[in-house]
Length: 154
Ligand code: COA
Image 1 (cartoon, rainbow, N blue to C red):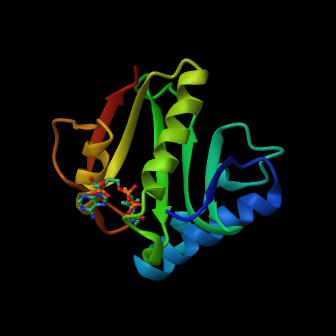
Image 2: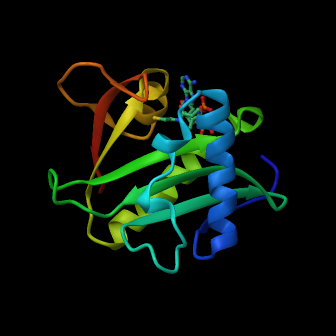
């Protein structure tokens, strides 16, 4: 693994880099409509208080991202989403690095239960991090098959 940095997004330019990774992965590779991909949690980090974003850069270049939604009012759990690694950087441990950073942020805030909607192909990735499938059916989000998963962080 070449030298890399994992940072919590605090500046608009870093947010733009995270969104650039997501554009390439979700909009271009997976054909998710832009209107569904970008939402109110993705604005200037100086003003958005509902989410925390993580960015991984290799030699200064963004390669991976993900976000933690802090609202637990739905089912008592925080929510991780938009986890994306550029195709050419996959299986290099960057996805795991994103998840570990998001878990640290959750723990620091006392958010010990986390849920996520996993694309079916990504289930082994999340299982390798300790997530378990929730009972329930496959459902479609942006036309892609998902299952709910969850973890209780130690
Ligand atoms: N199939 C099976 N296991 C996988 C896997 C795959 N495609 N990808 C990762 N894993 C598991 C492995 O156990 C791996 O450990 P190993 O490298 O020692 O075998 C572990 O997860 C960690 O993998 P890592 O290298 O950190 O994952 P990654 O950087 O490739 O990122 C995704 C994984 C899913 C984020 C990446 O494939 C991706 O961005 N896919 C497209 C976007 C997407 O679908 N995001 C998820 C939305 S729910």
